[in-house]
Amino acid sequence: MLTLFRRDECELCDHAERALQDAGVASFERVAIGWDGSLAERYGERLPVLVRGDSGAELDWPFDSGSLRHFLR
Image 1 (cartoon, rainbow, N blue to C red):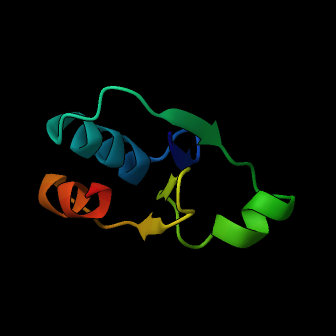
Image 2 (image 1 turned 90 degrees about the vertical axis):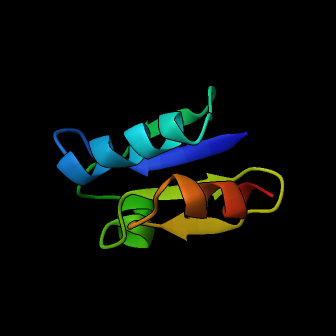
Image 3 (image 1 turned 30 degrees about the vertical axis):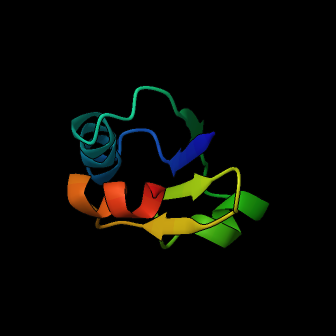
């Protein structure tokens, strides 16, 4: 499973979702992060961030469909 950590009202996060769709990723979890808390501390400056559930590997923005395909191999 893939998880996309993002913020609401985030244009870069919207671009990341389009890149996922362009790469043919049909299913991923969206997790909206606020401005406080442990997730905000971990990912706040790096959003959007895509995380692989199987390995825990993280892909920070910017990414495109090509880099996504490489990340998912």
